[in-house]
Each structure stands twice: as structure tokens, then as C-alpha cells.
Length: 248
Image 1 (cartoon, rainbow, N blue to C red):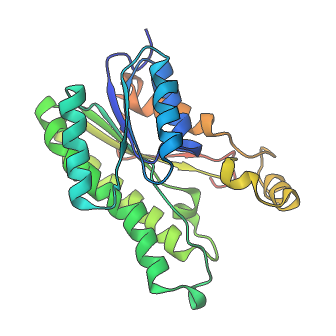
Image 2: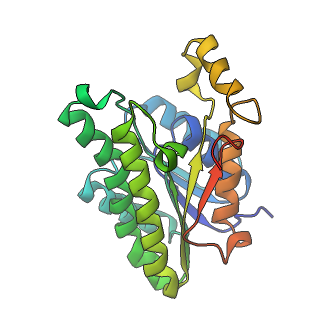
């Protein structure tokens, strides 16, 4: 019996990186997994097969969580297909980095829409089902940048800081219905995105972290397992930092 046996989870943006690691860990712990992808159709289909191999029900949906109607349809489809929804993980996110003086309005709107508005869309859509069940765990993936800021990432930092405020407010509103809402703030996590960067630059980042290494996607996924499981039944409205002490 896994820590998430019998639970149904919906994970947005799961075709690669941290989202993919979360989906795999959830399947390993016995959860049925619904997940979304947008552009990586092939990766989405591969992940669906990989998850099903753990003996759980898995289904990928091509869906844009930043579209209000699409998010509503997605949650309705998942509930109809899986019979309920116990854990919602908002992981979909993008970066459009630039210094503020060079940042375009489009780059601002796109990051706020995909990173922050998608959380509002999916949580609002999932609330009815969770309220009816009088249980549920919502996990929003924020970032260390949302807590401390970062030059060249004002749009990304604003979206991730917004997620923190949103998470705390949702926890207060839905607490009386036994629905928990928490955020996880990863630090420097080594994924496909960082693999293409200059090794010297990456090593410089590692050297600046007290634990002297970048985090692995699986280490963020483990935190998600904890917050999605009954082990965290009295934890809500919190931000769990997974960053090797780079920010405390």
C-alpha cells in the first residue's frame, strides 16, 4: 500500500521536469494520475504508458490551464473519468526573462497568465468537487524567486509571489471544508532546462548553495507526496521550501 493509494491526482504541466517527476512518484505511491501537457504530445503519451505500468489508472489531457473554460472542462472530464479528485497540483509554468526596461507587455501578460491565472482557474474549477467530498489537498508550485525576487525575472517573481498569497487565502477559505492548500517553493532544480546551460554557470550556482548542489526533480516530488498524503493532514496555508538552504 502506497502513501497515496486510492487517491486521484491532477497534475498540470507534467510532460517534463518537475511535473513529470511528481506524476511518476504519485503513481509509485498508488495514486491514479490525470495530467496535462500542452506542446509535448509525444512526451505526454509516453508518460501515460509509463505511469500505467505501475498498475494505476493514468490519463493525459492536452489542455491549457491558463484558459478559464479549458480548465473547467479539464476538471469536469477528470472527475467524470476518475470518479473524483483528491489532489490538485498546479505545476504548469513558463519563464520569459528580461530586465524590466526591456520587458514587453506580452512577456509580462504571458507569464502572469500561465503561471498565476492557471492556479485560479484550476482551483476554482476543482472547489465544487472537493467541497462536496469535504476533503482535498491543493498544492501550488511556486519558487524561491517568488519569496526573494531575482533580477531579470520581475514577471516570473510576481507570478510566483502571487501564487503564495493565493495559496494562503485559499487555505483560509476552504479550511472549514477540510480542504488543505499549500505551496512548494523549489530552489535551483536540475532539469532538462538547466542541462542545456553552460556548465561553468551551473557550477557557479551550485557553489552558492549551502548544500553545494542543485536539487533533483524527485526531491520536489517527494515533498508533493507528503503534502498530498494524509501525513500532512493538519498542514495548510504553508510554503515548503525545497532549496538546500539557498534561502531560509
